[in-house]
Each structure stands twice: as structure tokens, then as C-alpha cells.
Length: 252
Image 1 (tube, rainbow, N blue to C red):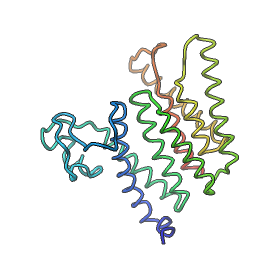
Image 2 (tube, rainbow, N blue to C red):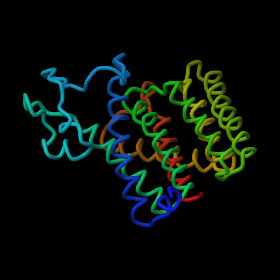
Image 3 (cartoon, rainbow, N blue to C red):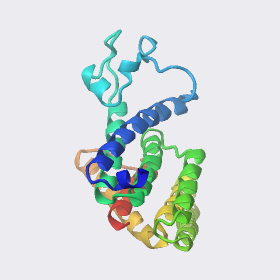
Image 4 (cartoon, helix red, strand yellow):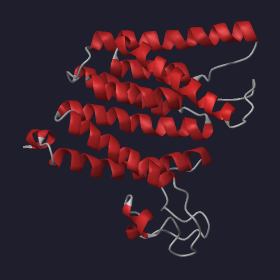
């Protein structure tokens, strides 16, 4: 009964979009609370300005933010757009995955995107790739492989080793030549976890897209007058996540 629904050309993408928006609400809470040392599993959501506990109708994904026009219903303080953006991204991940890949493949691609999203956002905002989230991504890749989703498990395992080795090698070479760290410790682990999803064959393309996007961003910043020096940091994890999911979407 469940399998035909996953393959329905209309119901499956809509249901996945709704599921994604709900998961996006949880992800938004996670990436907001975790850097502050707060648990996402305990305590009611509240306004950061007036500390008023939010009612259930204030927490409907996407709709509540739009209905309240991005402001607290109690104190009218502005609410940042991060929650809305994350919910929309998560909804789009679900909808696109099932629109292009109905069935179990769509579920796997959607899960890959939903696991990447908090890692991408935390790296973008805090240059932080928490190991528990990277581990969850890696375990998800193994589960998908043993469930029979392409690529095969051998390619995934080789991809994990290749991803780790490539970025650790680059980090070691940079440290040797420049005398300082050029990559965060979480970046090789993330690429290894991505390799467990996409297999070793896709990793060069992921790195090519991520590095190309980083170069394009640097050129735009320079054109706007931003001075780029040795202290300038780029969220490589965000760039790799943003490259990896479209590769999965278009190659499965």
C-alpha cells in the first residue's frame, strides 16, 4: 500500500514537500539551538525577544512565518528569515526528489538532502560541521547502499576512503607549505560521508562544482570591493553539500 504512494506522480511530491517542511522546522530549531548549547529535544519554542512560548498555530511550517509577516505575535519583534528559508529548502528537496525519482530512490535522495541541510547551514553560519551529524549522514549512506539503492556498496566504501584521503591530503600539503591550517577538520569527514552516498566516481564532480562555486563567490566579493586575504574563510562544507545533492538528484 505504501509503495504505490511513493510512485504517484502528484501525491508523492506533495507529501514529500509537506514532510520536508515539517523536517525543516525541526532542522531550523536544531541549527539555532545547538550552537547555543541548547537541546532541540527539550523545552518549548519561544520568542528570542520576549521569551513568550509559541502556540501550536505559531509553529506551522512556512505558513506561520508568512501569516505573521516574520514577526512575533506577542511583541512584534522581527523574526529572522532562517527558519523560513530552511523550511522552504527542505520542502523543495522532498518535492524535487520524488518528482524526478518516484519510489524508493526518491526517498533516498530526499533523505540525503535532509541530512545535508543542517550540516550546510551550520557551516555557513558558524564554520562548524558537527561530527554527530556527519556520522548520521555516513550511516544513512550505508543504509541506502545495503537497501539496494545505487551505487553499489563497494563504490560507496571506496568513495568514503577516497573522500577522506583527498581532503586530508590537501589539508596536510597546505599545512606543510603554508605553516597553518587551510581546511577545517570536519571537511574531510563530510566528503567521506558524501562518498558513502554517491560512490567514488562522483567525488571529482562534487569537488569541481564546489570549488567552482567558491571561486565564483570570491570573484563576486572582489568585484564588490571586499578584500580577500589569508584570514578570509569560505564554508567548504556548505559548498560541497550544495554540490553533492544536485549530483545525486541528476545521476541516480
